Amino acid sequence: MENYVCTFEQAERLRDFGIRQDSLWSWCGDKGHMPPGQTVPWLFISTTVPANSMEEEHRELVPSKNPLAAAFDVTELGIMLGYGTTFIGLPGEEAKSRADKLLKHLEAGTQTAGTINQKLNSII
Image 1 (cartoon, rainbow, N blue to C red):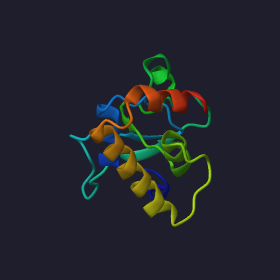
Image 2: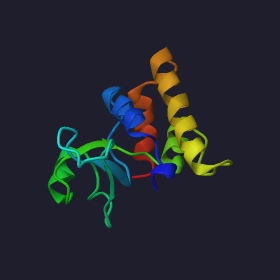
Image 3: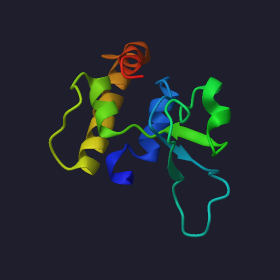
Image 4: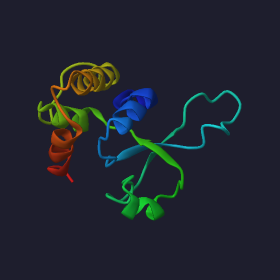
């Protein structure tokens, strides 16, 4: 599933820009206590939405008590960019590409966390 969501590094940057942490997927774990050979946190999905939400009011419902960042998938990233829910291309490359585009917009100031969060609200 890691091929269908943004990377952990991209997820952290989106979180740091203030993007609302509501996603079907989350990067979870303890960065300081990874098992040998594991370099990134675990990808986690809940069977109920918004129970997987990283927003504080839902955090107690998440089986992993240590969500690190929302792992936005191709569709969620497309909605944030205004592309809709369809995509063309390889899912892994498309998710990374869309996250990069979104980060470039945020860095350049052509989109704000507020406007992106409003788009996210439309799918929650």
